[in-house]
Length: 295
Image (cartoon, rainbow, N blue to C red; front, side):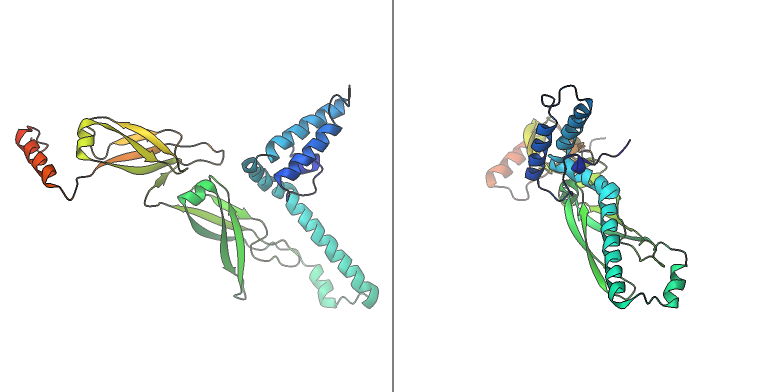
């Protein structure tokens, strides 16, 4: 499928624009190519479709971020290289105008050598489950051959998967004889927290309940990663280690699809009893015929 440059369609020069600027550009283009103004114009009909398609994507921040990664790969990086090349050529012409072309024999010989792309670099960083869920900007420090540190900001997209790699084009080792720089590959390790453990798209947590809640059944609230509370029904007679599944409250993938929140029941016995509670437990011991150790 041919890649569509939505910024070009809306006559925006780059991706560094706000949502408000996108709305203004959309209204301008929609007015220009509106069917009422271009009756019978097939070209205008196709143009308005592209304009609407561009606006639907760029006006939603999460969709814009995903599109921008593809846009940078297809358009943005090429523009940067073209600008750098133009700047270099202009500087060369300015120098030659005043000082003449004094390329040394070594430089001429070097230009005849084959271009060699720089080596790729691989590293990894650890992030929290929350950072992976919402997305985060991470700064990492790398050292070059001379031992000098270089700080790079890595944009970790929301919904990134554990073990997934992020590629930063041209951030690897320098190329030789004018060859392109290598790329930097960053493996993402998502660390479990005290509250959640991640398995695929599912999040595992613990829901503590009292012995009487386990025996009689109850309703309890379970907190999810998006700061919402979900009320769940706990049936009577439930045991420690049993699982309660809550759909669409887990982690998510790159498409925003949510997994399950799986709560493991943990029956917690009070470590301190009031006098009245102690008497109640003694009475229960006397009248109950339940014995979990009976063979």
